[in-house]
Length: 159
Image 1 (cartoon, rainbow, N blue to C red):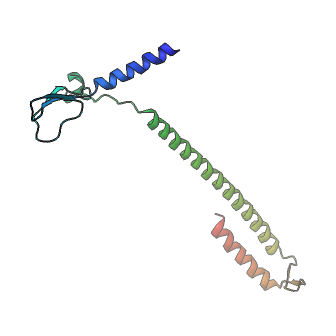
Image 2: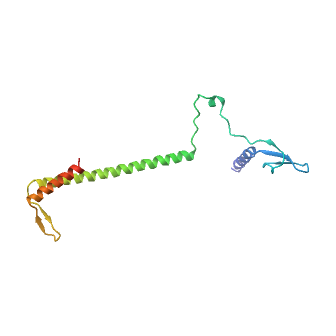
């Protein structure tokens, strides 16, 4: 286990060292200096080893008229896209559930209105409760007005 860890550590150190540039310059007294950071302004600097640039695409893939290669998404981008799709699906499911509940409520309300209209239009005696809790019987004109009002409500809300 220790040997694997040590070899991985050396591999990481070697790749990071290979990725750096090395600079060489002479100071005012003529001494040569080497460093991985460029010197202060005014000194003539020579780059001994340049840090590698990003790899270039092969000529066949970068030629005009050919399709560009598909660049893979990173894990974080895939995770973010997955979370976004999952949130959108949950939101759509919640909206569908609310729409279904609202539709069921509306159907029940329309059925109740149709039953009430049938009762009011039937010609049987109907009563209402007043503020004191007493039953007051509706006249024929009041029942006709109530039937008209119920029909208008049904036409408006229950296609």
